Each structure stands twice: as structure tokens, then as C-alpha cells.
Length: 419
Image 1: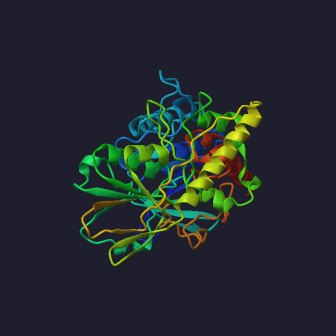
Image 2 (image 1 turned 90 degrees about the vertical axis):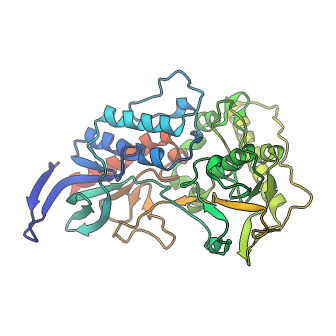
Image 3 (image 1 turned 90 degrees about the horizontal axis):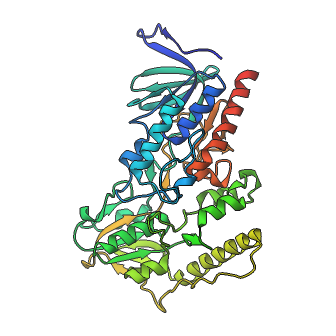
């Protein structure tokens, strides 16, 4: 493999660095790529706009913990070795873990190096950064799947007097103005924020759309132990009938609390959170909710029951565990006047997407999704890591990066050898 070099371009005396592979992002995915690139003797650099594990340090709310227990927070060559294997890491602890991983793999990270553009050039790519130009044969995009919070277009119809936040800007209830809070979205993020805000004493209305209900513990073990041990997480991307839908599924209603509590809609109702249907529109300052809440909750209950039955079948257990169905009021409100003073804040927990604004390669579809097959993008020498369902169902979690990064780097190295 060729080694890093520098040359001076005749254009304005620009110095251009040349390296075989550029990795964009120094989170756990980019560092895993570095680990396997080093093992393949591929010279490379890892470019990070901030510092190692930047998003965990700068873009998480204060109380956030991982959904996965500590023993599952495995990285290539670095298993959890702390005193609390069944606990759940805080965002600060995740940042420390990723920073430790960077030292273990001796990754060639350049911090405060923002990638401004990546464009095709000759037999590879030209990477423009705030620190200069780099020419490379291949690029691994590991810049994250949650760079931008997605919100509906009708958020502009919310009265200007209300505070609007996304999870990227939320830190804790103490920073919210007095008054009620409308949380839109009931995935892991939405239910966690709804519970936290309600416990602070504020009235909370939670708008519920499609969601995945799961217990934190099942038959005495963490629900993610069952996912891991039974092989559910090992299903490959090319074995799934509707891959696009699988990649868009909301994160399960879980929280990584020290008490290992279940956090579902019944728990929230018990806290006094008001459940309403999916937010369909905001018109003339009035929020309009779908009337299908009962059906949405029944479907989530049914899917949970089927999943748990599958675990029982795998384990050879025949006595079913009964769970109370989601309790939905006989009638839920269909409108909420946002001008009436009941609500002072709207939190949009409506999902995230990657930011590819710097990627000047025609591999992003009209919805902002990267076109790829198992991490091999729809352009020669371009790869991705750290995206949901990249190669397996476990790809969304820290412990899924080892197999993904190994396979992607194997493909990359083979292409370099064949070139």
C-alpha cells in the first residue's frame, strides 16, 4: 500500500497530501475502521471535526445512558472490564470508552479537522478540509447516523411564543421555560424525555406514532441479552424482505436506568403523562392528532408478544409470560390549542438523519439516505460504517461495529489489491 506523502500543486502553490484511505469521523465506527485498516497495512488518516467521541461529548442530554448493558459494549480488542457489567453507561462514560479505544488502536486521528467536501478526482477522491487538501484512493464515511434532527415541515406553524427543541439541543428540564411540554415521538428518545420532564413537575403530553414496545427485563435477563443470545441481531441486511423499512424502524422504548426499569406507555401513564395520537398537522396554532392511538398501541403489543414468543421457542420454554396491554383511554384528545397557554415547549423527538452536505458524490437519494449495499456505497472506493442495519440488525449498537468494520475493510483492501 502506498504511504502518506505531500506534494505542491502548481495552482497557487497548494500543498496536497496523498494517503490511501481517509476515514471521516472519530467515533467508535471510524476508530474500528482504523483498527482494521491498520491490520491490513492500509495507510490512512481519521478526520474528526471536533474531538474523539465528539457527539457523545457535545450532543447528548445530561441524563442519557446507553440502552445496552455494559457487558454488551464491546469494541474490537476492547471488552468491558469495569465493576458493573449489568449497568448502562452515561454519555460521559461512552466518550471515555471511545477515547480509550482510540488509544488502544493507536488511530491516526486529526481533531478539529472539518471535512468541507469529498469529490471524485482521478482514480479516487479529493478531500477538502479546513486544514488542507487530501487526495486518496478510498473514503470510509463514519460521521454518524444522527447528525441532524428530523422534524416535520409543519413545525413552522407552531406559534412563535413557544420554545421548540430537538434532542440535540435539550440538556435537562431545568433549562425549559415554565409550563406544559408537548413531546412528539414515542421511540426511546421520546419516552425518556417525556418521563424526565414529567418527573420535574411539568405537565406532559406525548404524541405517539409507530413504536416498538419492549420490557427491560424478560425472564430475569436484559431484553438485549435475548436479542444477542438468540441470534436475532445476527440477521443480515440481505436476508430482510423490506430493508428500507427495517432501517427506518424507531428505536425500542427502553431506558438504561440503574434500576433496570421498564419504560413503556403504561409507565408514562402512571406518571401522569397524557397520551395522544400521532401529530398529523398544526393549523392556525392548533395541533391536530390522529385518532388511531389504540390501533397503534395494539400493533406494538402484538409485535412484542410475537418477539417474546420467539425467544421462548428458542429457549425451549413453554409457560408464557403475560404483559398488560397498553392502556389507552376510551377517548383521547384530537386537538390541542398551542396558543392557549397549556403548552410552553415542544420537543421534537421525531428522529435523526446523517449530514452528507459535504459529500459531492451522487450516492445520496432524495430523502438524504446513502445508497449502499452492506456498507459498500454506490461509487467505487466509497464506504460507510455506523448506520442502522448496515450489515446486521446489531449494526445500530456499539457491539455491532466489529463485524461491520471488518467486512467493509476487507472489501476495501481487496479493491485496492485488485486495482
